[in-house]
Structures are given as C-alpha cells and as structure tokens.
Image (cartoon, rainbow, N blue to C red):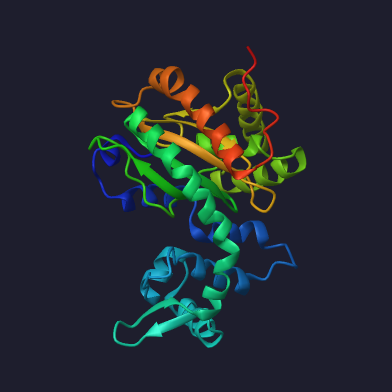
Length: 295
C-alpha cells in the first residue's frame, strides 16, 4: 500500500501524504454541510483526540493543526477546551499535550481491542513472513480505513506504513473486504462514506461493491493490485471479533517486485483465510456467512 519507492524504504509519512492528497481530514465537511444535526465543533474535537495514537504521545498545536487540516487558531481553542475538561493535559516545558485523565477513563472500553491484538499478532506475523510483505489489522474510520496494527517481514524491500495511517476504503482490499462483512443496509452507508472520500460516482462505487462481493464468493477474500497506489498489491479478508466490536480486516500487502499477485493468490491467500477463521474462533466472533469460497 505505497509506491515502489515508498515500499523500498521511504518514510511512512510519505505514504500518509499520498493518501492525504486523496482525502484530507477536512473532506468530511461537504457531506455534513447540510446536516443540521451534525455538530462540527464536536467532530473537530474528536479529530484532535484521534491524533493521539498512544497515551505516551506528545503533540503540539502546530502538529495537531497539520494532522487535522485545521487552522492553528482553531486547534488552540480546541486543545484549551479539551484541557479544561481533562481530556488533554499540557506539558508546560515541552509546550505539548498528552491525553489526560478523562481520556484515560475511557481506556477500559478499548480493552477488547487489546484482546484482538493479542490473538491476531501471531497470525499476522505468520502472514508477513510468508508473503515477505506486511500484514495489517485494519478497521473503518468514517470515510476511510485505519491501520490499527502492523507486522512486518524482515525483508528491507517491504511496505512501510505507520500504524494510524488512514487509507482508501474503495481502492484497497481492506476496505472492500470490510464492506462484505456488513449487513446490506450498513454496507450501503459505509459505501456512501467511502465514495465521498474517494471522489467516485455512485455507479463506480456500486461496481466496486459488486466486484468485491463476487471475489469473496469465488476466492474467499478481496484483492487490490496497483489500484490504491502503483506497484502495490494486497489481499484482505474480514472477520467479526465479537458482538461488542465492529468487523475488522486482515490485509497482506507489499510491492509488486516482492509480493506479486500470483504469490498472494496462490500461496498467501489460503493461509490468510485460515488465519482469519482461527482469529474469529479464538475471539468467539460470529461466523462469516459469505467469505468461504465456493468450489
């Protein structure tokens, strides 16, 4: 999920920049402009909190403004409010913020997510080593997909994408697999959000949904070969981690020179499907109804 140069060692930030060119943090605004129930200030505050990818992270207003795509003056007001409410705390010497006690109080609700990581990581590393690429645990974040965890192969010639990177929902295998794990009504809602961020027509988006449905029926996973960024190939399968958590996807990706389509489909795909089934069983998630290929 990066260009060939990026896959061969360029910083992960460059991948995020490439994705930002497709869908910036402020791209939700047009979709909500006519929604009188949508509270923009709340959404912006949550965007600020989402920039902190760990409780040890420290970020200043300038960094937050860049990540959120908002004016620094706006971010300054948001961080002041969040600090007053205890969701952030200021480190005076550094002039940067950390997550505060109010945010820490929310942490127990995320423990199930930590359980997913504990179960998934061994399977992810197995896939990364087999493919010589990267295995990623990916979930939806509004109109895009969010990389929640990565396991890398030891090879230098592999994909480098940071945890927390947001990627396309319709041009990646992960987004396509996620859509197939949803009930029809939810899939259409997610499709609309993905379509807005990827700037695709409704007909194009529906075509992607139909192709993905057929692919899951035939081979048990979705694929994306050079469709998100040139020379990057990936396959993905979705699973249900349990009743309290939304569907997640497990993706295996890499540059075409190292991870060609045939290797992914012939060698990695059966192991991916096996790993997803095992993760789901270990977590007690509901069985998928449409991800087993028909012979």
